[in-house]
Length: 125
Image 1 (cartoon, rainbow, N blue to C red):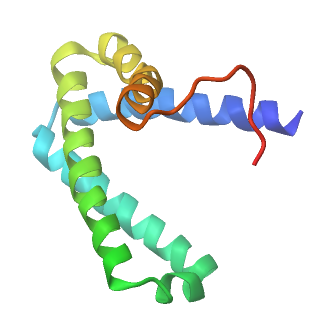
Image 2: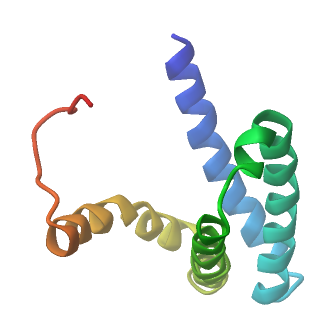
């Protein structure tokens, strides 16, 4: 029952966040909205990460930190900017279902690019 409640809370939060982004973008540029969102997320995530995983974070190598930095620079700012731009231009009702199709493209690219195999059900490690 807890899992169902958490899943509903997460889905509701994503839905409300899209509407709040759309409302906020009426009064500011997409670039500024993206910047505000990224800074808020970075501060919150950084505080939680250091509070719960300080030793693990301090043990990371410089090459690992560099790889995460590249992913963070390419994925979050660009992805969020294009997501917010689509909400601003298309509206929430059109852009959110397109964003929700991301797992389908991830599966397709994983099969085509990395040679992942599709299997029914969940696999165990």
